Amino acid sequence: MTINEKQQEIIDEFALFDDWMDKYNYLIEQSKDLPEMEPENKTEENLIEGCQSKVWLHAEMDGDKLVFRADSDAIITKGLIALLIRVLSGRKPEEIKDANLYFIDEIGLKENLSPTRSNGLLAMINKIKAYAMAYELKKNQ
Image 1: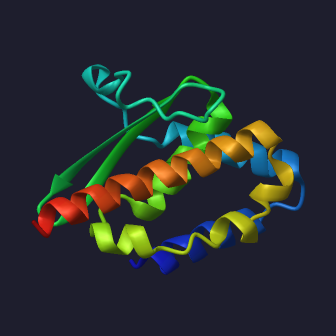
Image 2 (image 1 turned 30 degrees about the vertical axis):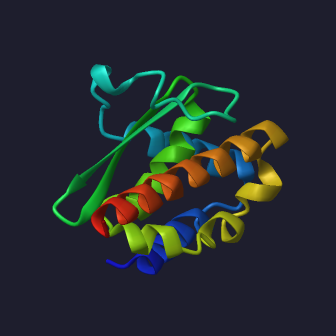
């Protein structure tokens, strides 16, 4: 599945719910599907700055693909990072770097998240793209 196909899948899933409380509950469900992050990766270095809650993001290359693991101490935030990982993990760094994450607007996250959560979501996206740029540069050296 391409990045855009994954995004469309998420848009279709969220479209099943009319009420934002149901969408929040679905976001919480997404957090439960996030694979466990190894405790040794919950380091200060892997903490995302700009998030009010604690969010850890670890990246490593698996062949030519970038794989992410994440965790958060807040359930909604964990659901947000789970969606991002679902779309972007297992992709080539250049795909991640160039990805237009339109699903965020399409499912209404921007309008329905608090300003601090919106800032945190942006910080998560920026960190994921920063990892992609770093690994792409490393590969091209």
